[in-house]
Image (cartoon, rainbow, N blue to C red; front, side, top):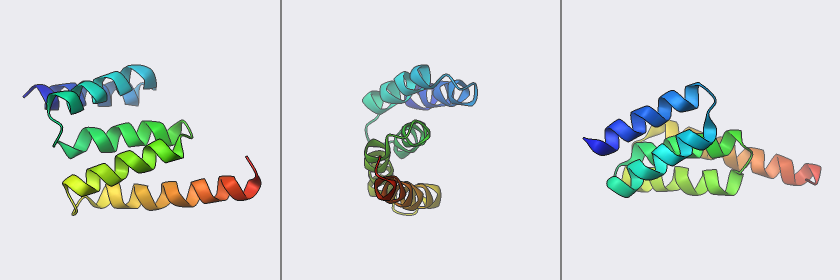
Length: 92
């Protein structure tokens, strides 16, 4: 379906480190199918890599809300929270 195709295209762009383009595809996948957890997770990964921890945390939580068994999202959420706290302790 369209959401899966957009998500997959976004993932290819993510792997090529084309983060802005990947984010556009993930957002389009979410708009196409708001209850599809994978593009939230993938967008969270991009946001995490960019150091946007609050936004990444929001996306990981949404992925888990949609699929509580999504282990990678749970692990990524924990790591994003830890890294956000470490960044705050360092004062930037």
